[in-house]
Image 1 (cartoon, rainbow, N blue to C red):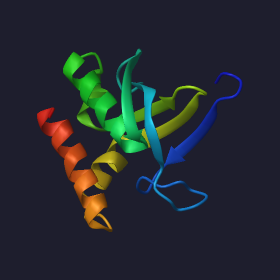
Image 2: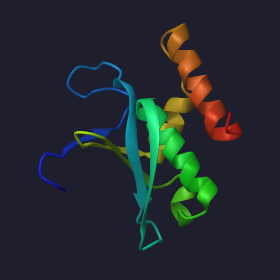
Image 3: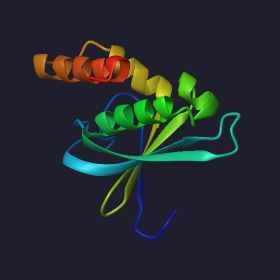
Amino acid sequence: MRNGDQVVTVRNGEQNANTGKVVAMASQKCTVTIGGLGDPAEHVVTVEGDTLYEAAVRGWKALREGRWSGDDASGTGVLVVTVQPPPVVHRVKVTDLRAWLDGGGKSPADRMHRQRLKALLEDGK
């Protein structure tokens, strides 16, 4: 890791472990990295997102479409989301991202957000 990078691991939903609040941000440039499972290379793409999971979905989708992500595109890897600048790194298990997308949501706005991101991942719209 570079000096000044902060690592946040998200395990059970799109939450900040310290506050329990949704990790939201203004639309920011992020790099999304995947690699390691059966593939000696790491693959990186730059996307924009309003939330951690939106950036993860956009990056995962771009990497899958590029066919450079090997076995990790199947959904068993870990996506590393680095928010620029300053760099803040988040690691999101693809299985956790899928579970969050398939979850019901706690409010109408949360359900709409999940549905929009799931449609983005599936359709590209």
